[in-house]
Image (cartoon, rainbow, N blue to C red; front, side, top):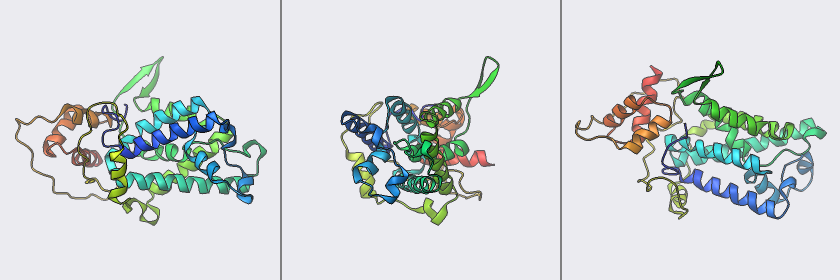
Length: 292
């Protein structure tokens, strides 16, 4: 599972966030400020500088954290493809802001010298993403290593565990705050899942001329899926388009994108045929089929 074979296609917000995180990490690392970026309870009662707040959100404090963090952010671009860039932007803002509020609250209550400065980086977004990853990404394969059973999702969990324990208490605290933020998003507090960033904002990220991996970018897909997949327990009846003629074969990259989300290849192909090659509609068809 790698979140899709076609680089950052249909994930411009993720691409911009990853680039910003890498640049801020390098910038603060060159200046020797990496160890000073983490928030502490002194920042709550004192004057929190803007550069420190920005650094605590984007810049990782070490190279190993950067590598594992960017890998997870890159994989989680699958959620931007599922719910659309407009709603995924709201998910990013909500996760970052709410996790920061939880961090401030925890630091103010604990005042523990062992966590007087939490580690920096987009821990809130990364660990908030584990909530939809756990509930909404199905397992596609199982295998055994030395008699222990693993799934294709295990590698993502192991990378997350490594990042969570990278600085012990200093990294566990922001990780837990991120999980709480992701849980609140899933619970749809304040109807947050209905919120969207204006189209002109997300289209700005699409126009950024950063090089991407994989095949040429395809046209932006419409946000047909709506709320995050399977967040609602109610069955929603949709009028899907009639299937295409059997002579029209779905593109291989579209099939591979759905397979990377954990769906069976044959089911992915059939859903694309029914959805007339619209990946968003096909994803919704497959998720609703799993729910029943």
